[in-house]
Length: 330
Image 1 (spheres, one colour):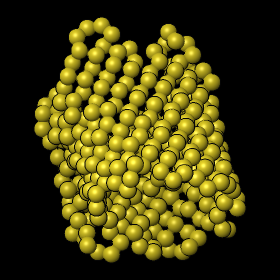
Image 2 (tube, helix red, strand yellow; image 1 turned 180 degrees about the vertical axis):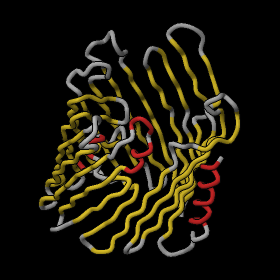
Image 3 (cartoon, one colour; image 1 turned 120 degrees about the horizontal axis):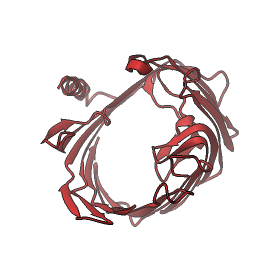
Image 4 (cartoon, helix red, strand yellow; image 1 turned 135 degrees about the vertical axis):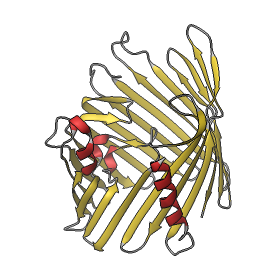
């Protein structure tokens, strides 16, 4: 309840200034409508997936960038009790103070190296994160960023409490290639580091690649030695993206992830697309292959966006969701 009250007060504070210069607002209402599970053995099930309400407020000025996002869910909580519940995972905030052109001070802000991004799964490899709960970013020369920070939330994690120190840097070379490296928790047992590169020399075309020690991609694939790559191509109304990553056969994890996505704008209002992702374990007796297929569409009119799709996952059975959402932004 305390988190709900604090979140509502924070949203109210931002909302009271919605019409101030530099403020943007987005509200999203969404649902998977139903969660359908069809196991290989046993009975199938159909359950109401709940309805989520997510509010995002952002402020931008010459010296300050700030954002706040919070969500509530109408549905069953962890105790299977139906009601309105605060979504802890969706609550997020960040502040960046820019006293000088070459210096930024950040709080709870994500700063990622371009080459760590995988567009199909829409996530960065964890080793490409330069941001921190508190950090400093300096640009001693044009196109170079160097970041250092402290994960202060790690000081309050019980038996695992310790100081998390993070470092990172990236450099844009003549708008052709971006190279970067980052390290997290450098003095802790969960330390990770990564090196990445992006080719951006052709308009509408990009290639990312990287290596991460102790890497993780959105919980789907992880391992001590994670190699990742992606490519995107955009021209007129057409866009295509490709992901691939492997941990070279780590134990207790999927060994290969691959994904592809295509988008097409039919007109200024309507667009359609589809994505396909799979995770595969070289030792097939450990993890069954997983395949996700997601055809979707989006219709935009003025400040309103309406989205729809079918989310199908095949892994020792079938799981189906029917995601729909409405966004309003100004």
